[in-house]
Image (cartoon, rainbow, N blue to C red; front, top):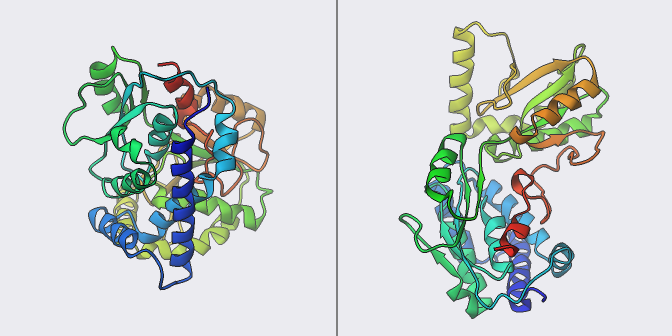
Length: 348
C-alpha cells in the first residue's frame, strides 16, 4: 500500500510555501507573509539563539527538501501496510536548533500514524504554526496531530531526543514501549592540510551555523601533526561577525577566561578558540582539535567511536562522510544516529 497522497501533498504545499516565504524575506519583498514573519520574531524573543537568519536557514532547508520528487524517492524504499489502526507515537523533541524535531514529526505522519508532540521549552513557537498550515491544506491531519504540555500519556511508541543524562530517564519511563531514544552526539572534521580556502570556508558553515548548537555541527577537528592553523583561521575570518551576537560573545569571553586562568594552551582569533583536547564536545565559541599521524588509523578510531559521532566531514568522502559545508543540509534519508525512523514506525 502506498503512503497517503493527501498527507504528502500537504507537506509538498508546505515546502513550496516555505521556499516562497524565504525568497520574499531575502529579497525584502513587501508581500512576505506577515503572520509567519511575526512567528519568527516571537521565536527569536523566546530563545535568543534563534536569530532570524538561523530560522530562515532552517525553513529554507525544509522548503528545498519537501518536494513531491524528494518525498516520493525517499518513500519508494519502504513497504507501506494497510494502516487501518494507526498508532499514536509520542515525540519528545530537543530544542537546540530551530525545528530540530521536524523530521520525526514528518516521519510519523507520513507513516500513517498519529503524532503526540512534546516540545522543548526552547523551541515551541514554530512547529504549531507549521502544523496549522498543514491542517489547512489537509483537514484530516487535525485528528493526527496533538501537542502536549505535560507528561506523555496514552501513546503506543515513543521517539525521544535528549542528552546522555535525560536518556536514562527516557529509558526508565519508556523502555517497555517500542522506542527510539537518542543521546548526545557530535560531529567532527578530518583535515589533511590540502584543503582549498573555499573548502575551509565551507567548514566554517559546519562550525558556526546555529552557533554550533546542533549535533551536526563540527565541534572537533583532526589535523596532521604539521598542520598550519593560520590557513584555517584565514578562511574562517569570513565568520568574524558572529562575535556581535551577545550570547555567543558571552560564551567566548567566559571560555577564553577559563582557559587562560587554567593556563591551557589555546589559539584564538578574536571569535573562535582552538584548544587541543581529546573530547568530541567543545563548548560554544571553542573548537577542539587533535593531531593524527596516519589517516587510516584515524578512520579506524572514528569507526570505533561511531555511536558518539553524528557526521564526519572530509573532502575524501567515502561511506557516510559529509562534504564541507553540507552538515546542516541533510536529506530526508539522513536519520539522526543512523537509526531508520521510518522503518521503525512502519513496523509498529
